[in-house]
Length: 467
Image (cartoon, rainbow, N blue to C red; front, side, top):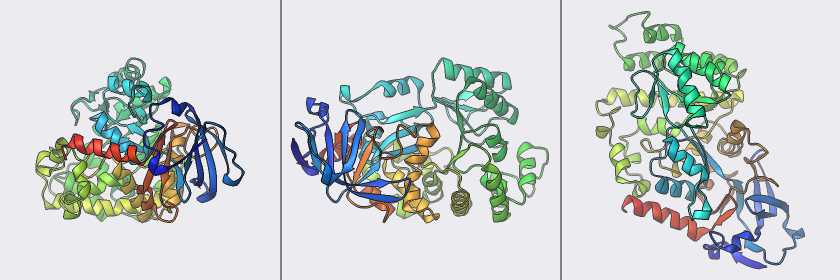
């Protein structure tokens, strides 16, 4: 038996035969994210990539060859999930994800051949890769917003695209997007159900939120559709969007229409709409980090963020509004509108939480001020601003993703038999959610990554960024 302090663990468990031995986290406080409580002074034993036992530290008897890590005063939580990511440079993104305790991701727009590689890559090749589920290309309207998307202009093609994505490209789910026409969206939803594959993503501009949920959309992103649903002018708004009514004097553009929604926002209507939403098996991924990042992109509190030392030049350039095709012509009125919407969206998150709608933590990294890895902790903090307790915020990045994927028996809590994807913290996250940032060590697929390794991952990302 070897008793090792966290600071001395180094690379012991990374690629050596020592990892074949049991890893023992001794005297650690286990955070029960489901109950919002602490199991003090526990011993957690990891065999292979699983938690084999959890017992009181006083009753634990080490076996010969155990690698025992002294974790007294530390806290153990399940590995975190970022449920809305876009991985552009895997070495860079994965280093920052894992160093921040993000051991699982849902990729919302990646190349399928890369996703296949990431699924099969592992520590045997010396590479640290989070668990991941990937959509492959976005499915959008006939003139997609993003290059690399699949353009779909009619229902028949929508069905063929679902079949191709599932059976040829082998994506994990279908991502629908903003410019899909209602009949095409309905065909994609129906074909996804027939093919037995999840579809998720944006509520298309011309589709109502409740209609998307009724059609079986597993999750909705960015809170799209909620302000529209909660507006006293909802019907008029959709008439404008669908083109059945023309009002170019009062509402000549989307900015004017968004102002109408903000002005006619009705909290009771929001409550009633969310009550209706609850009848469907639908999750919500608010991505408050990106909502805030766009709204305050020119705020010095963001532009001077010290974490920018981790940004690769491409991201620095992209975060400059002048270089973003969506923002380069935006004036003060646009950002004022986005700030007003962000404030309303915080009310939406509060209402969703009160109604018991399952919320997923996602950042939409690498959009403006969505730092890979780091910003998941920002997302959890924003949730507590919306009324969630620290335990409830933690659930959005642990238990809720497990339920979303149907993996409750596999992950989401610290329990015997579950995957050893874990984060060791220096302070209690149930007291203050910001304590999730105080990471001592990470366990990924049963591999212990001690403080030196975590620090090395951050330095690797910073070196890639050129800083």
